[in-house]
Length: 117
Image 1 (cartoon, rainbow, N blue to C red):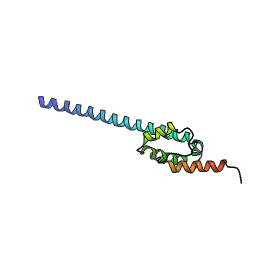
Image 2 (cartoon, rainbow, N blue to C red):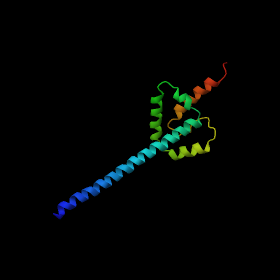
Image 3 (cartoon, rainbow, N blue to C red):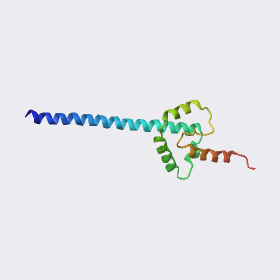
Image 4 (tube, rainbow, N blue to C red):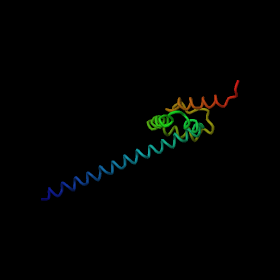
């Protein structure tokens, strides 16, 4: 009888540990999402491309793909430091996985702002 009672308790402990691990991994995932969203928002604001990005055709898909690139970036600390160090940048840092996207948007803004020749 003791063996029967011990098995559910051990299984219960295992379930609790699995739930804790799931919660921590889920919490870590959402923390990472939040951190990367903040970094991407900071980058877009620093480069002054927010309005242009929102007005692009298919902007929801463009932003989703940009967010996915940011989420899978392996240099969030360098990004955070760059955002702190660069007061008025002309372009995103070379390591940014969205550098080319932001470059296209800022180039378009530069063309729109230039006087007609």
